[in-house]
Length: 403
Image (cartoon, rainbow, N blue to C red; front, side):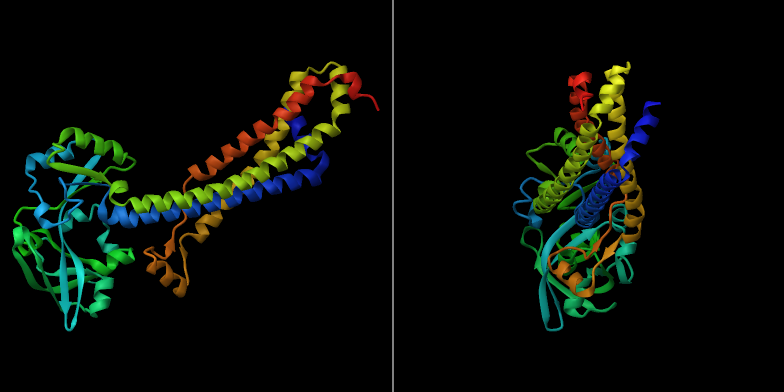
C-alpha cells in the first residue's frame, strides 16, 4: 500500500517529476556511454599491446630488462617450464628470442626487432589469423619471415621478396642472413608494425648463434586470473638472483599511466554529472517535503505513525530515481551495441596511428557498467532521503497545520 501511495504521490506534480526523471535519465545515459567508451578504449589498448604481443607476465634472465641484448638470454629446461606451468592461473608458456637488427632491401635500410617465436603456441596469445593481411603465417618448419605492415610499406615488400638482416649474435657472433617474406601482418599497433620481423624460434636461434637460448618466457594466464598474484607465486618459486619476473605494468608503465590519467578525467566528468543529478533530486524532494507539511501534519494527527510516513517518502525518492536510472540503462544498451566499434575517418585515423593508437574504439558492452551506475543513483536517492526523514521526525503536527 505504501509503495502504491508513493507512486501516486510522484505524479501529483507531473511536470516536476518528469523534469527530475529526465535529468537522471540523461546523466545515467551519458555516464554509461562515457565509461563504456573509456573502458572499451583501455581494454583495446591492453589487448593490442599486452594481450596480443608482450603478454601479461614475462620471465627474463636477471638484468635483461636493463640491457636487452642476446648475451642476457637463458636456456630453460623442461623441469623449469613444468614448474612454471604448474602454478595456479598459468595456462601455458611461450618462448621467444629477440634482438635488434639492421634490415635492408634494395637501397633502403632500417632498424627492426627480429623475434623468434613458436608459431603454434603463439596462436594461444595472438590471433595471428586476424593479423595476417597477405601471404601465409609462419609454420614450425618455415624458413621465411613474417613482417609488420609498417616494415613492408617502408621497403615496399611483396610476398616472395627477400629481406637482408645484419646484426650481432650471442657472445659477439655475427648474425647475417637473407630471408624471403612469406607474410605481412597488422599487429594493431602502429609502433610494432614499423619494427617487427618474425621468424620461427629455431631459425632465430640459428641466426643469432644462440642454440636453445631464449630472451623472453611469456606466460599466458587463464581468464579472470590476477597477473600480480601469479607473478608473486613465480617469484616465490624461482631464484630471483638468476631470473626476473615482470608484469605488463612494469614492462609498459607508460600504458598504465596513460590509462590512469585518462580514466581520472572521465571520472571527474561522471562526478560532475552525478552532482547535478544529486541537486536535481534534492530540489524535487525539498519542494515535495515543504509543500506537503500540512498534509504530513494531518496524517500524523489522525494516527499515522511517523515511521510509515518516512517509509513513504523513501519509496517516493527511490522510485523517482529508479525510473530515470532504468530508462538510462535500458536506452544506453542498444546505443552501445549500435555504435561499437567506433571507426574514425581516414584523416583522424592517421592522426591516431601516428600517436601509437589503433584508430578503432570498441565500446565495452558489459553489465557491470550499467549496474554500477544504477547503484550510484540508488545510493544518491538514499542520501537525499535524509532531508525529508529529518523534517518528519522534527515535525510538530499543530504547527504544520497552521495556515
